[in-house]
Image (cartoon, rainbow, N blue to C red; front, side, top):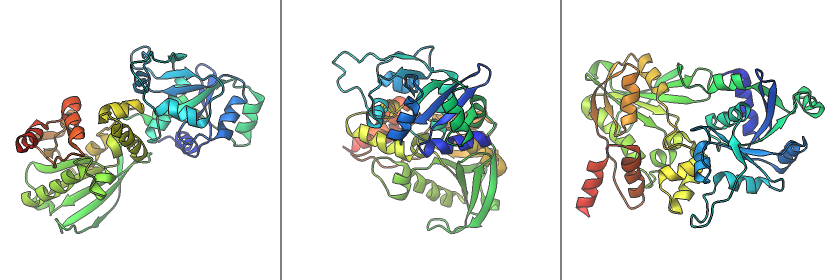
Length: 375
């Protein structure tokens, strides 16, 4: 990740404002993340005199009843002037309370390139995808003073765009060690870091490589701390993880690629927010949409890079997700076999599993049918 953009994301995570410049157009905007927005930061932005705006994704705009301009562009929504950090957070996260009533009218327009760059950083950093923005005169004395004394960092939209681009992800193998597991004593952990980025991943190599079958059994698994570590009943992730390890043991070995993509790529904090929305009646896809995310924010570039580093080109993929099969095959890794990997269904995760099948196209109908037959 570009150094300036990395620092910019750190500033946003610390609740500070960031100046994003568009050098080609000679314009700039100050942005601050809605998540963690403090009253003094809000007043700092208001002090520049230009009306403030909230920038959200088109997913969030749709949840607010706003028709997205120009297809899937981000949206910039005008604020009235009396908002607090709490009311702005509600504006960016809460569903429309009563769909039977006329929807509120918002002063909405397509986001500018500088606003979109600020929003892109929050999404990349797994923050809530919403920023407060104010367009400023690049020559403003107050702004120049803040830049010079280090109060505000300046980053260009080009630096941000280069940092968050998903194509060509490279990973670096940082460390490796033997880590005996209860279900697989002959296991080796290889730790990877995305080059120039924050994300870190692990490949777990089960059994001696000379014993691996052809094709190599592989599970590409996105981290789920609630399910993998604590055994949450709201999803089937932990059971899939442990089921893959048992499969590797029975097959003589294999590889678990464990990706830092909590909550289908939205991060743990946003996943917990989505859980609250699900408790109020939304399914997992609609809950993520209310928060400004698509149905699945994950990417598999890092998994492909890890498999290439391990010189694995032909796999038996343990998955119910057609997107994983497509991602590997389009990257030149042969998916010679696909093996279903089911967890259990209970009253806490039934709606979640059903939504994955109905709305995301996961191959889960056999699993759901077995539950219905048992009932």
